[in-house]
Image (tube, rainbow over all chains, first blue to last red; front, side, top):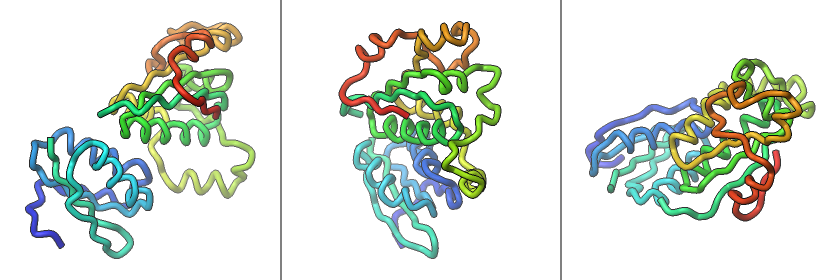
Length: 79
Length: 135
């Protein structure tokens, strides 16, 4: 797992698409630059959608770590 | 975010499954910075009436009982809430087709506030860029 300090963690496991992405977008909007947000998602769509949105929105995809039946997405708010 | 062209959709069907699918597409397009233009005709327009937007609009016949059960079990947010989120995320415009409004003898006050206005078909094509999706 990452050594980056997580500012906020969101457990979106069990949420259908596009719930986890919407939760991330909400957290990015509310957060400060350099905040590190972790999203836990079991939604298959998140695996492609979260990195795609992060890249499009100009934030940093720190890492994606697979877990049992879900994944940890760690994102840094860049702007 | 930059504008990569609009996502233009005509919503014709008024069943909850199709409206749900359209709402998810609108959220995704808005999240990716696309302008979204939605035009409501016929049964989709009827589903956006303020007094019936939350009622059960059924599902397309191909869903069958099994499909309906699967959809309910997934427990998605109601499509009207997803359209609200899409509007909050980006530039998402929803217009009612003037001709369908006439058919139902309704005015904009009969519609949910999600609907931004009433347009003729030409106005929709003026705003739409690129291909138009029909659902």
